[in-house]
Amino acid sequence: MGALAVSQFMLFGSLFIKPGGTEYYLKCFNAIMAMERNLDDLAPNPISEKDLEKINRAVQNCAAMMRFRFIGMFFGIPLFGLLHGLAIVSTLRIGFGLGCEIGGMFMSSTIGICFIPCGYCINCLFVWSMFLCSVERQLRLRGDPLLFENIVKMYKIMKIMTIVEGELLREMKCPCMHQIYSVVFSTVGLLYFLKEFIDGDDISVFILLVAITVISMASVIENYSICFVAKVALDSKKWIRQMGRTHGW
Image (cartoon, rainbow, N blue to C red):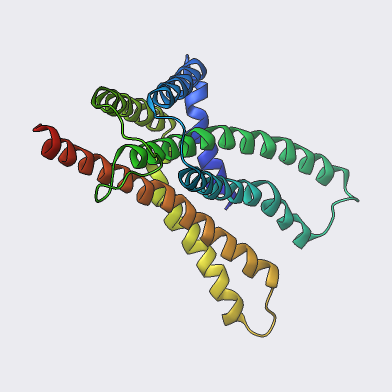
């Protein structure tokens, strides 16, 4: 598990190590936020209370997924040290543990900085694609219809946003390997889960909880990487068909 976390750190960190990588990260992130502000300016206002509840519920669900990811990273992993007892006798072990803690926090912070734009990019496209596309002539997340000019502008902004987000995620490299990490993490978690029942009577509840947490984290990652992106692509195709029927594109 530690080796997989280190490999994630190396892939994410490669963006910041290369010359101009930090500036590239900031420019892409600021550009995405600026485009979302433009989308917000084009949106009809006010939003009905029913739609506002849907938006808040969607944001809370997405935020809960990200919090679950970071809780496992910052609070679940250090508990592994309790299995080997407290290293308070050996000065060498204390120094080594302190170095690992500082390095681990630096590594976790780097991974977290990169995970935030990954989740934000997917959530942004997902919510705005729902906003733009209607289902069976029923508007979603808005109460008033959009002007045709604003619809076209919003679609073009989202198209540019998709290109910028794709370039940023490819530079990070790790998001492109989400399937490999999800398969490895879930397989390791499942092996430890089954191993506790195969070995005999001595079943560790802690290891079972950690295994379930790892499998759940892998499922969350795949839900973000596949399901949300697929829904965005599906809404985009629906929108093009709707514009073709309505305006003769």
